[in-house]
Length: 322
Ligand code: F6P
Image 1 (cartoon, rainbow, N blue to C red):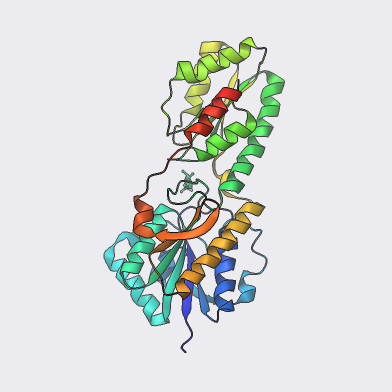
Image 2 (image 1 turned 135 degrees about the vertical axis):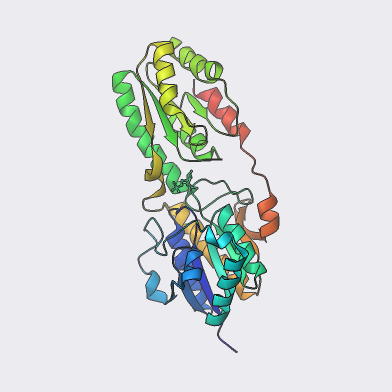
């Protein structure tokens, strides 16, 4: 029987744990007797021929590294049909019948297009935001939250020493999950997320005032990137309440660093699953976590799903951070 060849790429914003997923794909593929190629810089690598055959040692000692050894990109060019056809032709010429695409929603759209052009693709959710509706969990989320937690804990030390209010912006353009989880973990007085409309007087000022009445003098407000405006919020709090306030934007520090145990394990399981699906001749699927188990869904179905924000968790946070 002819030896099957598959490839793996990472696309979109990098996320800690992507390397663990790449390693799992390479190792699981070779273990099944396949040839496995690494494609560099996302879908652009298929267009520029940036590709290399991997062996078992190509992915040694990367499981604990942040970033992605395959580099990544958000490819504008790959949105064009002509580019998708060209990439599929490139794969056919190399004998590659399937590609594992590790990334977010945008990357899954690319995977769908490449499958439609004749090359089976399997998506693996990798993004720190946890903003992929079809999966309870995305690789990188745990590490990013823990980094944000450590950073806010440090900010708390200085906010406490100075009796200040610190407003901290965490990542998440469309999704407040990092803000919500971090906010709970640091006991934030207010948490602002894009999924929930807020009123500055009721949801920030009144919460600070009520907490002040109980004797507290320092406050942490966690704000998701998608809400933004942390510097203006700091100024407003200073003027309105006559307390010192400081704004901090954590930014890309949340995207780097050695992945946590959870991210390494989930990435390994998802990468392994993706290879088993390609081995079965399947394409246009995305590996997901559902009820804590690793399973898979049709990409179209996955992309049509709407994310549900955990309002109950938000309510719990608001009722105990007082
Ligand atoms: O999707 C992951 C993410 O880190 C978002 O939280 C953030 O909005 C975005 O990527 C930042 O993208 P870039 O690195 O291109 O500035």
